[in-house]
Length: 140
Image (cartoon, rainbow, N blue to C red):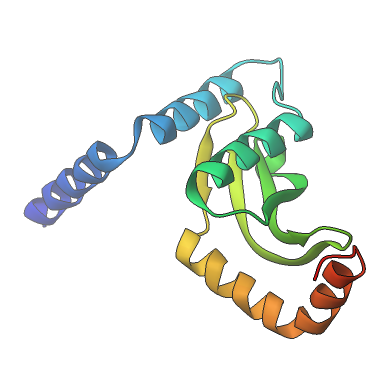
């Protein structure tokens, strides 16, 4: 039994070692926020900006931060990721990204491959409307 407990602790340490510095900063920010009486320091707009910056680095165009909602008692922003097109706006939600309301660090994100796949499904479902909106701008 003691050996199992040691293995669990060793596994937890190994998983912590694999976290990116950005994620560790987000966890530290969460812990500091819980200890300080000041409350949320990152606004919804700031959380959306963090998500948009991340999306620009990880996914192609058309993926944008959508609605941001406070969850976990106000400690975390859950920011929806949308697929958007000009003249149409957001045509579907493809994932979500969690942002610390204290540090502004990304805690977790839907997998980019999964968001691309859901985005392709959204496009396929709305292809004629998307094409019509594109053609209405005078583009061939």
